[in-house]
Image (tube, rainbow, N blue to C red; front, side, top):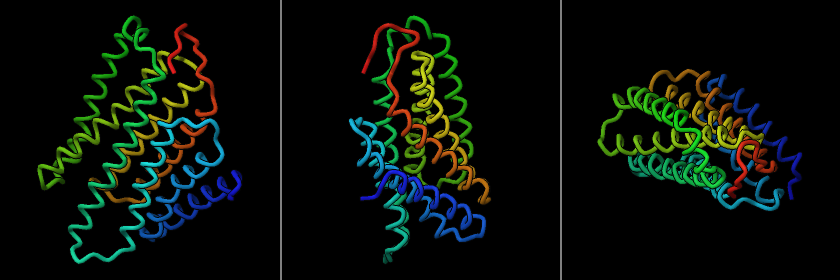
Amino acid sequence: MLKPKFLVGIVLMCYVLFTVCEFNGNETLALDLHSLLVPFITIGYSFYVYPKDNLFWAFLICYSLSDLLTIMMGKITFSSQMFANDFEYFVGNSLYILAYIFLIVRIVRLTNFVYVFKNLKIHSIVLVFLNVYLFYALTGFIEPNLIYQADYYFEFIYNVIVLTLFFVGMINFFCRDNRKSLFIFLGSLSIVLSEVMDIAYIYIDDRHLLNFLSTTFMLLAFNLFYYQTSLPNVDNKVNNFIY
């Protein structure tokens, strides 16, 4: 069985090789290396973290399955490339959406919404307006590049889920104000930044730096999420604990 430090070494090696391949123009190998990062983190969590948080575990598994699907689809020859692209797009992104939903539910269960409704109304309203602005900004970049109406609705759902993750991550931090909630918030923020960089890379300008930044923020997010699993949910603001 792979040792934890060895797994960390593999993740770092994949990240370094991804960076080299990305900036050298070997995009196929870079994509494969990118897609191996989260699966190796998932292996580490599956075998070496006890007790496990089932919702966080489900988040890791769904995200890993989508990444592994990307590798698999790149190795299989299909009679219809359009079908292959649509299958990878809808199934892969559906797994990402499901993964984010599991993580959102986990964060919601850590949040005391009684405290939020009593003390964080202004914060919540400001965050809602910020999310609406970010949503319309992202939609403005994506919409001109979409052909089918179904793609628009799918991107709509995807972006709403990602921004909801950012919203609940920040609200949980305002509510709990501890190290665990800080790491969750920073992880959520890193996910949003990763998705923004990814959108910029796909729809605006396919510069290698954007893909590198997207992967870097993604890896940072998963390391922050992984680390917070070992932290207690010590409450610095409210007396009621929700687990």
